[in-house]
Amino acid sequence: MANYNKVLLIGNLTRDPQLTYLPSQTPVTEIGLAVNRRWRGQDGEQREETCFVDCKAFGRQAEVLNQYMSKGRPLFIEGRLQLDTWEGKDGQKRSKHRVVIERFQFLGGGPGGDGGQGGSGRSRPAQQAPSGGNAGPPAPSYDDEQGPGDDIPF
Image 1 (cartoon, rainbow, N blue to C red):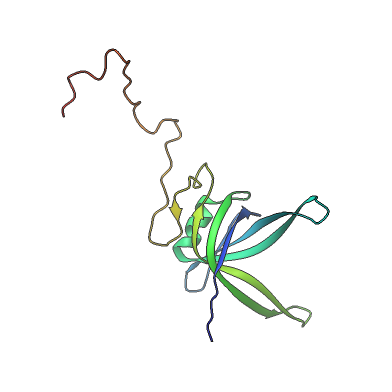
Image 2: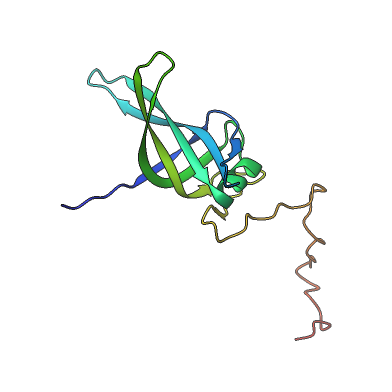
């Protein structure tokens, strides 16, 4: 029998990431993701529903998510479904599905969300430009008549 457990989601964080550590000192970050679905009903009216998904990341991915993400920021995640079960204080058995993040990518602009790659565990997050505005000296400008001139070394 074939099995396949893969989840792809794009949504916005519902809260700031929560970083904790396992007894083995492995970092764990939990996030909530809100994923919207829009459709037109049979009556022709536009409808929308939001699905709230709890997600968990481990290791370096957990540290990167905690450092660069915050409530409201968009995120693309790839992971797998996991069923957690426990017994509540009242003695009732409880269960909950969550997504274990295997890869992710920042979306949108701003700090940490510049559209760069993230979350593979092998790549470093994209560096931000210094807060002074420009990330380096201004590019030279030439007017059409003058051109760059003959002092270019190639």
